[in-house]
Image (cartoon, rainbow, N blue to C red; front, side):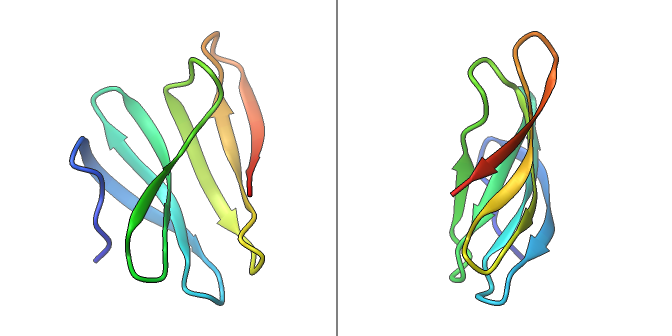
Length: 83
Protein backbone atom coordinates (compact mmCIF):
# COMPACT_ATOMS: atom_id res chain seq x y z
CA UNK A 1 0.00 0.00 0.00
CA UNK A 2 1.27 3.47 -0.87
CA UNK A 3 1.19 6.21 1.77
CA UNK A 4 -0.71 9.44 1.17
CA UNK A 5 -0.04 12.89 2.63
CA UNK A 6 -1.45 13.35 6.13
CA UNK A 7 -3.86 16.03 4.86
CA UNK A 8 -5.43 13.57 2.41
CA UNK A 9 -8.47 11.41 3.04
CA UNK A 10 -7.95 8.89 0.22
CA UNK A 11 -5.67 8.25 -2.70
CA UNK A 12 -5.22 5.99 -5.68
CA UNK A 13 -2.64 5.14 -8.31
CA UNK A 14 -3.30 5.73 -12.01
CA UNK A 15 -0.06 4.49 -13.63
CA UNK A 16 3.36 2.97 -12.94
CA UNK A 17 6.45 2.98 -15.16
CA UNK A 18 9.14 0.34 -15.61
CA UNK A 19 11.20 1.96 -12.81
CA UNK A 20 8.37 1.36 -10.32
CA UNK A 21 7.60 5.06 -10.03
CA UNK A 22 3.86 5.49 -9.51
CA UNK A 23 1.57 8.46 -10.18
CA UNK A 24 -1.94 9.09 -8.97
CA UNK A 25 -4.13 11.39 -6.96
CA UNK A 26 -5.13 12.08 -3.38
CA UNK A 27 -8.29 13.80 -2.19
CA UNK A 28 -8.50 16.17 0.74
CA UNK A 29 -11.04 18.65 2.07
CA UNK A 30 -9.40 21.35 -0.08
CA UNK A 31 -9.38 19.49 -3.41
CA UNK A 32 -7.51 16.83 -5.34
CA UNK A 33 -3.71 16.69 -5.48
CA UNK A 34 -1.57 15.03 -8.14
CA UNK A 35 1.09 12.76 -6.63
CA UNK A 36 4.20 10.88 -7.60
CA UNK A 37 5.48 8.02 -5.47
CA UNK A 38 9.19 7.24 -5.87
CA UNK A 39 10.22 3.61 -6.19
CA UNK A 40 10.74 3.52 -2.40
CA UNK A 41 7.11 4.62 -1.86
CA UNK A 42 7.79 8.21 -0.83
CA UNK A 43 4.95 10.52 -2.03
CA UNK A 44 5.61 13.91 -3.62
CA UNK A 45 2.89 16.46 -4.36
CA UNK A 46 2.95 17.79 -7.92
CA UNK A 47 2.14 21.49 -8.18
CA UNK A 48 -0.77 22.46 -10.37
CA UNK A 49 -1.63 25.74 -12.00
CA UNK A 50 -1.78 28.85 -9.84
CA UNK A 51 -5.06 28.90 -7.93
CA UNK A 52 -5.87 25.32 -8.81
CA UNK A 53 -7.48 23.00 -6.27
CA UNK A 54 -7.99 20.03 -8.62
CA UNK A 55 -4.97 18.36 -10.25
CA UNK A 56 -4.65 14.86 -11.69
CA UNK A 57 -1.52 12.87 -12.53
CA UNK A 58 -2.68 10.32 -15.09
CA UNK A 59 0.32 8.66 -16.78
CA UNK A 60 4.11 8.44 -16.44
CA UNK A 61 6.66 7.27 -18.99
CA UNK A 62 10.01 5.61 -18.35
CA UNK A 63 11.77 8.99 -18.61
CA UNK A 64 9.75 10.28 -15.65
CA UNK A 65 7.51 12.65 -17.64
CA UNK A 66 4.06 12.81 -16.08
CA UNK A 67 0.95 13.93 -17.97
CA UNK A 68 -2.28 14.99 -16.37
CA UNK A 69 -4.60 17.92 -15.97
CA UNK A 70 -5.11 20.91 -13.75
CA UNK A 71 -8.20 23.05 -13.31
CA UNK A 72 -7.29 26.74 -13.08
CA UNK A 73 -8.82 29.01 -10.47
CA UNK A 74 -11.59 29.98 -12.90
CA UNK A 75 -12.52 26.32 -13.45
CA UNK A 76 -10.97 25.74 -16.88
CA UNK A 77 -9.24 22.41 -17.47
CA UNK A 78 -5.67 22.46 -18.83
CA UNK A 79 -3.30 19.71 -19.90
CA UNK A 80 -0.15 19.60 -17.76
CA UNK A 81 3.23 17.86 -18.06
CA UNK A 82 5.49 17.48 -15.05
CA UNK A 83 9.18 16.65 -15.62
